[in-house]
Length: 238
Ligand code: HEC
Ligand code: HEC
Image (cartoon, rainbow, N blue to C red; front, side):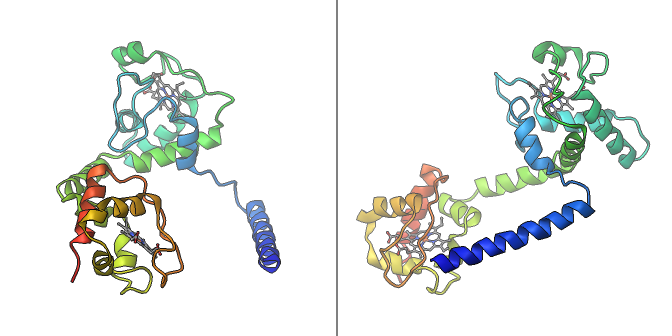
């Protein structure tokens, strides 16, 4: 145990030092995705597709980005994008009615955005704006919605197999990483549906002596998906 901790400590030290050398050479790296979540999500919805709620404090970031990019001056799309980044950098630090591109009704509904001076820097806003340009796009929205519709049309158990990694261990693993679904079905009957569901929601360990790595918990499945996958697993007996 001591030995493992010691070698971990050495590894961390090694990583820390190599990290140091790098930051000296290059500019500081700003993670636009992390920053937008940290600094803008309290007012702007960040989802794709955007979620619109009655008590929202600001228009969703998708709407803001797509409309602003359109309204920016510039002949080419890269000029428009550069102007978008510059606009976000200046507007967020000093918003004003005169500079806002929002239509009057929008400004009336939400009020002017409070200045974020002191909460976010110009450099951070640059990274946020670049991220927004890449992430909030009509084409991307269409693709995401198409994929969501494809998943929504599936049976609940198929949704689980498409969205989660169960197959990796329970089908493709040939019984090496986890018991095959057919083996699980052979061990239990339909009376055990609740037990199966609990194992998926809470994770499982120690029930299958041949496997030493426990299975993690899957907490975010809907009741329908959970019920569907449990019944489907129990129907897999060969
Ligand atoms: C306290 C709430 C609040 C926070 C936090 C906030 N905003 Fe806003 N934002 C608003 C409101 C309200 C509006 C709409 C009115 C306006 O344009 O001023 C808005 C509008 C905008 C606009 C559109 C301006 C226009 O003219 O169309 C941009 C761009 C923007 N916000 C970017 C950001 C970014 C980037 C962040 C995070 C660094 C952020 N906002 C954080 C409330 C907020
Ligand atoms: C990383 C590999 C891995 C993944 C991914 C995985 N499992 Fe497992 N699963 C296991 C292992 C290993 C066991 C045996 C654990 C034990 O000994 O209790 C197990 C056990 C089970 C059991 C039996 C539990 C019991 O009480 O006997 C069910 C049901 C199950 N998994 C369903 C799923 C479903 C559904 C998914 C996807 C949402 C999934 N597993 C994803 C490895 C995995």
